Image (tube, rainbow, N blue to C red):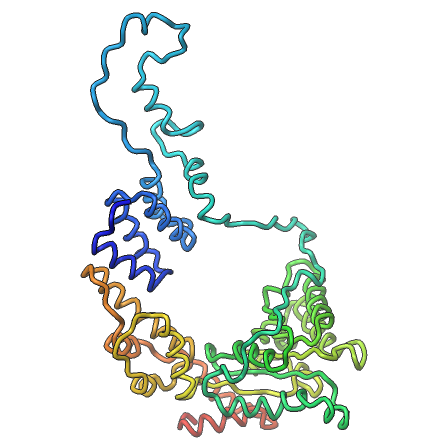
Length: 441
């Protein structure tokens, strides 16, 4: 392999800094190919195809990289008469012509590219796209047993790993964790080892991460459930899936069942026209109650939603998801922790986190991640244009932060109406207090 040029070395560093950038990786592959490093180009294009299997430029570069080198164009000597006249020797009468027809490989179109040979060439680099057999037409290929649901072992994430959010942590400790951490007191006061908590708030503010931290605090297994895991087009399958999920959690107890997007799984039945969805909500209510007093012992149900006002009221009665917790956009310590996390593996210089934290007030965790991504993208493109890798600086981050509008504003516009006109029983008192504190009410 020839020695890398300074430009190739710079591009390698840029690709290592942002390994998911397909365009940048293909640019490096093209430079390697032009430099005669076909093997290196194949490796880079193979990684790019993992991210974008149908990328036209990547497929064209792969074809160029693994194509055989063109044959030398030296004039061939005239065949001897004996060679032409001896059909029983088995030798071709025109060696150059025979070689040109064989380079495409067996079965390849004449003059075309042999994709089968290309696939064999990179088979040990690019993994297969599909490894599981598809379901049968009637859905019977669905395993449907408890082993079909993936249960994560007790994780290492704790509430201490959640940056900031002191109020949220204190509410979790008082309302949910403290009774479960003290088995003697729980036995004395007759507290069952079960519970339900509904996390609600604007999207992108860390509800799922908090649920995992709660599971880590309890030392419990973690079973995350989304609408795709439950709903099925065949009658009765959705209810069966819901039952199997809770059966799995009971067998794996202690286990935290996390119901993501609860409004999709447990929406108000009065607004549901399809009987299948109503039956699914009914099945969820049955599973939360358990078939007897101890059926759900050791099963902790956490749910998250952006629109708690769309959740069926029966799910929030005492004994089910009777405790609610508002998860708001990250406060200053949380924003600093989030920014540190998303910048720690990126090349940065002279970043004033204190200033960045102040100007990103109101942004969600997802917004902050996008700020870091946009700043990295700007520095990357600048490096690609100039051919010299440079570090991400404060100007990149300030520019990205200025361009990102808080994604939580539409949610607060809707929540404001709910807090003002639909706060029966003080359900949304925490939300009202926050809106007043921010002068949004």
